[in-house]
Length: 245
Ligand SMILES: [Zn+2]
Image 1 (cartoon, rainbow, N blue to C red):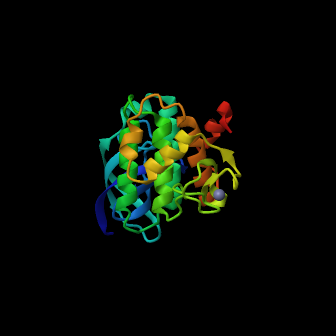
Image 2 (image 1 turned 90 degrees about the vertical axis):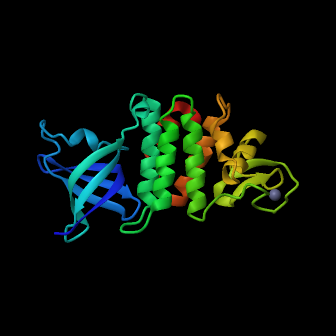
Image 3 (image 1 turned 120 degrees about the vertical axis):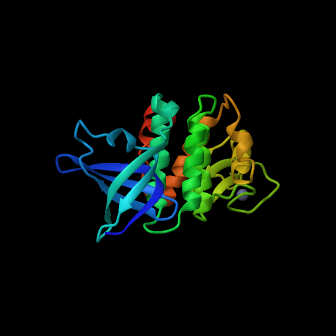
């Protein structure tokens, strides 16, 4: 059996038999890989705490015949302890992991996606940063990477560049003027934030503290990505349960 070493972030884990788990990772050089972690559910396992959702690890993989490989060594790079200690941040991180799990290809170079995810988890792993802004920015950037960014610099329907943009409807292409409006009404600030995130001003948005429209932005970005993926994201359940949708 041949083997290789790489780094990965745990996207998903599923029980297998009595003691094992199938762990899904995103890796920079092999895309999504699935590997069996033998004995990981035994109480004596030293590996179990290292392969929790969202952990960033260095791994050795023995190649299997099909898509299922065998995990042999796991060393922690970062467990993102601030995220783990905060329910909202855990939930936000699940959304990021779920979104990446939907778009990453098996056996493909995925350095850019991996960098995006590591970057977003590092931002989330800091009490000074607003989790809603991190999630919103990540989803918008992911749409952009997928070639499916919403139009935010003019009316997506009539193309008017001068009109103020007052609504957002991802199915209609993005932000809309008053004549063309459909979807959700958006305050000026949200339209401006979307332009900044998609236009190279991401850092300045993420550093804002107490941004009053963070939740609106997260909801719009979540809905847009869900339309693009044609499925719901795990973290969005809670977003909706809190009455924002
Ligand atoms: Zn218009």
